[in-house]
Amino acid sequence: MLGLCCQWLESRVKRDGSITYFNAIEEKTLQLGAYQQGKYSIERIKETYHHNVDSHIALIPKLKLANIHSFRLTSGLFPLWEFLGEDYAKNDQQLISKLNHLGKLFTEAGIRVSCHPGQFTVISSDSDRVVANSIRELEYHAWVFDMMNLPRSPYAAINIHGGKADRSDRIKEVYSSLNDMVKSRLTLENDERCYNVKQLLDIHEHTGIPVVLDSHHYAFNSEDYSFDDAFILTQATWGNNIKPLQHLSNTEPGMENGSFNERRAHSRFIHYIPSQQLEAIKNNSIDVDVEAKEKNLAIFKMRKDFEVFS
Image (cartoon, rainbow, N blue to C red; front, side, top):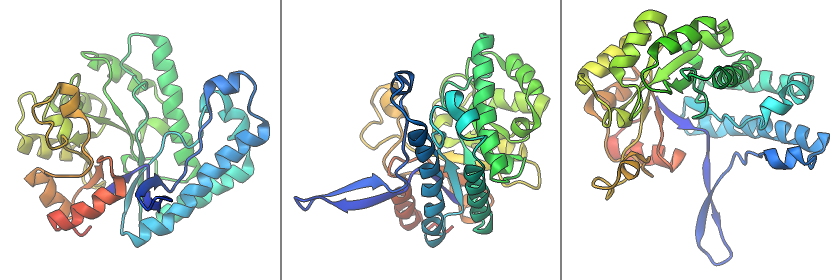
């Protein structure tokens, strides 16, 4: 199945007749500086949290109509969680009821839900403070998933990168200390610089953490494995009962000879899919998060261009 990442784009006609696109989820944010200056009332904070959940509830019919059965939930569902979560989420029974309802809607629609905590979630850091903050971030995502009654398994993946290079032992150490609501869902994704598939497979051997294969990142950091081998070996980390999750994007056409950052940036649409990944998508043996910038529009185009109907 093709997975949508965090946003749903819709068109809007401007006064001059031109068309622009916006995120119909309309996720609201809170700024740290404004919060520290006391600019947010309790009502503003609560309204932001409720609005963001309500917007996702309203998204479900669109996902069902579009036959999208995998969705990456935003990490910004509850902004400033580290400062406000205990008071304005965990103690709000109405909000928790809405999360229960949202999870039920996802489950009844057969939509797999995952998340991808941000770049500062680094459990391999040499800094105990950074690791502690990273664990709190993971526990935030796990709490949301628990309130949605999503399974404590990698099917509801909390996916992160390895982080600081050459710290595989640190990842293994921190993983062993995680509570079950995080540990049972944690997955690791290969990246362009620090952790290739080979290194993550070694971590898997010691921890059992499934590996999310990102075919775009693989192109920059392939180590000794052919893509065929990387594909097969990462699939095996998911066991027999959980469909593997993978990621897909491309370099933007015209940027093939650009700088490293230009080449690694996600393309607007999907122009190329490795044959192994495409075959697995077509036979529905993997779920793939489409990390193209045009979100659902990229999925719709991809279905036509590659004759993908899942």
